[in-house]
Length: 420
Image 1: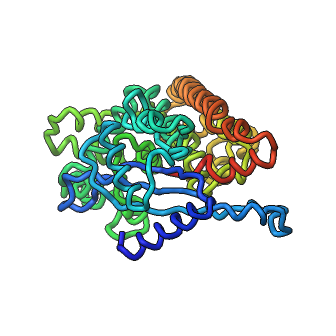
Image 2: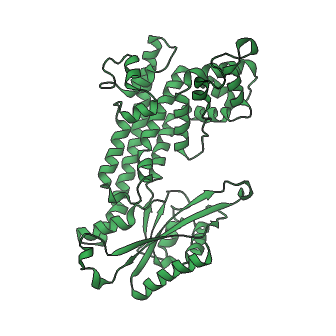
Image 3: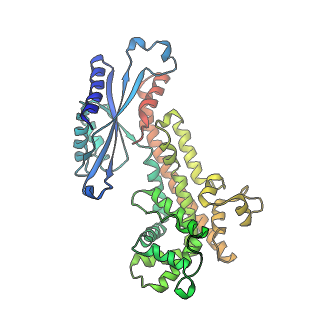
């Protein structure tokens, strides 16, 4: 941080201390791996400091504070520091260095928002280190990370299908594979291709304009993007990889697994179902990204009930239609006489698969419905448990700190769910 900016922020906090209007701070912090090659060996710790500067108590009864809170929220970005390890004590020492630039100490830290990672939790985590110096410290959980863990539960329940998805990502990003698939699609059969489309045609642009997304570990949103990308291309992709297998000796384990999975209609349907399920599981992630303070907009219990109902809902709504890239006309074309009114989106995902018999479709439908029930139940169970834990700790702490409903409301607005 430039020296003048740092001095400006420090002066604000110093003056608030002198007037008795500063009561402590909270923080949000997480790691951020470097994207530039020259920083490849570094692990950056990004930390925000959040505090509120109270107005003089003599002004709290002024008319301007009848429906407003008598404080000014402030947040400061700390210096970006290389963190040499992922243990709680190392991360804690790095954050002390970041806080010290503003003249802040661990004894003044009232709360911290973490992602539930090992460096934050446990007996030697960051939270425990601060608790040993400040008895009133309150641990808080980032709502942006909670839906990631919910989606992870679904991915774990998907078992081999998740392994196949990772193998497909590796296969598509391996060397010349993506360029070979383009050539196979556009070259004529006597040239070794399939002649499915003309180079630079609308069909070619629709299929190849977007490169395959990369599946990243511990980032379920990237898996969702890849599965959505695949579900729109499953029919043609199966033919392309079959031809690629004929022309190349693919001996690696991931390539063999990927090609076999892409040609299997049942696995294609389950990937389509998985894409919708993951998108539903990440509802809280996309919702929270748009709001700085979630408690300002929603009751916590209602928000978690809404997220759970979205995961288990089988209706074909506009979000499912967008995820599956279908219209009402296409839904009717798949055999639903009244469109999406009484249809299940799992059945729609099965009927979208081309080149299978009615008997095979019935078998795949049973498998897909059982798959949906199993995965959605596990995700909702984890979501409900996480919601109840937050209700008993973070959300409840606001009510315990103030006997008046207005005071609790102010506490919720100011501190509880600041994003990390």
